[in-house]
Amino acid sequence: MLLDLRTARVQQELDAKPFHEWVLPDGTLWTRFYCSGKQYLLRFPGLADFTVSANGTKAAAYPMPGVSRATIEHLYLNQIVPLALSRQRKLVLHASAVEVRDRAVAFLGVSGRGKSTLAASFSISGYRFLTDDGLLTDKEGDGYIVHPGHPSIRLWEDSREALIPGGTDAASPVDYTSKARLLADDQVAFCNAARPLCRVYFLGDGNTGRVEIVPLGGRDAMVELVRHSFLLDVEEREMLARHFELLSALVEIPMFFRLDYPRSYAVLPDVRDAVIRQVAELESGVCS
Image (cartoon, rainbow, N blue to C red):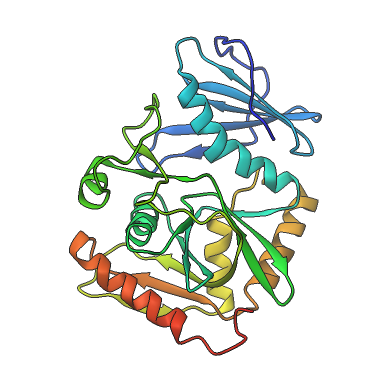
């Protein structure tokens, strides 16, 4: 699905009421969701309106005057595409993922838990990243595969300074965040091929003194997956039923864990070692 960038326009007040809203952890309104029957309208206040066809195959962007193209492209890649894919009956999660021993390892958590930092930490240590966010997974055989996303990672400046080698290219800055979008290169390594999913880690809040990995049962994993799913229409029963079917099948595989660790860059090597060790210890056939 290509970005269809339309002429800039001021966001006019709408007669309809939104059927859903996204609010950031600090209470800031991020997105309003509207539906006209034939298409959806997603409003990012002060930034842009996006329309998405009912079947999720077409989208158009209407930026506010003065909003940069880089901002629109950023919103499109990280918000609109994952939501549109959900209308195509795809399972897309708010997650980063990396390649370990030719398999995919995913990290899920609310904003600020360190998904991107973990992906960057692995990628500069010889383990290529698959996606920074918007993890697309499909059923394949007895398991699931993770498809590669956009070859870039978004990091706050402190993480960038602590982890990323100098000289790594960054995309143009966007209007609503100071996060840098770093483009994959020889040092920030990217995997451009699908990999079988073998481990899913839900990130804790960092209120611990050591690296902790605890298995999660199917019911707890289901609750977490629901919280971290991209869904364009949270009110359409057919789509919700399909989504729960997909999640129910996914949690049948025993690969879910709670991962917590002190939020210190010095601890990241220990986190990597613990995850890599778990993947290495998998019994033959578990992730095939």
